[in-house]
Amino acid sequence: MQPSTPDADLAVTMTLEAFADTILPGEKRSPDDRSVAGVSAGGGAVASGAVDVLRTPEGGMAPALDGLAEALNGHARRYAQEHRLTPDADVPPFVALAYPDRVALVQELTAVDHPEREAWVSLAMFSTIAFDAAAHLHTTDALAAGHPGLATLGYYPPDRDGIWRFPEYSYGRVLARPHPDTTPSGSPA
View: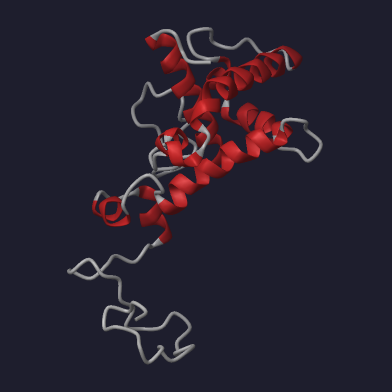
């Protein structure tokens, strides 16, 4: 199902951002940011491009996103009703939940015995992929732009020529000798 209006598209985006922020929280982008709860300093999944990663054709999730956002908001309505919450009707139901309630709902949806678990775990994995790998960007571009996930992880930048070289071995010793036919760039012959 495709959103039929700009408002529907915005609701899907906000819902997906709120889910991603629940998985890897970050700081608000502005004081009126409703999707990002702002429970952590620095950039989280949203600032790392989680929604962009979800929407890439290569990931395979793009066709399901509208339905997942709709289902998540349905679960949020049920959760709010069960917990006697009165959510703000100006934003999608999942976005309207306070951060601890978002966490509780996501824990419920990703529980081993939940029938929709695979879908919600997949959505969570894409949120972490955006943070851990900047999968939607070329690594050198992501590093140059100060990608929050790669910066947090201390991702080592390439040398000036764009090639990664590691003069000091991460284990403090050479683990194996290069094959005799390895080229100076490190490629196999």
